[in-house]
Image (cartoon, rainbow, N blue to C red; front, side, top):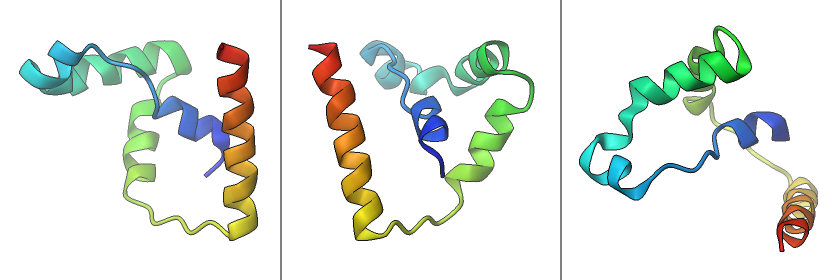
Length: 74
């Protein structure tokens, strides 16, 4: 899976929505459709069922990439 797809799956949600409203998956799916185009929610649902195996080198690259993103947030 490309990093762009991983970023789509990592959106923040309010704690009360996750606990008391079960994450409001339907509303979030509608948001994804509006923000990223029709079919995005379904594509991510299909991706969530795939098994992905990363090589050690790829994992290290991903760690470096996301550490840089974190550094830029600080």
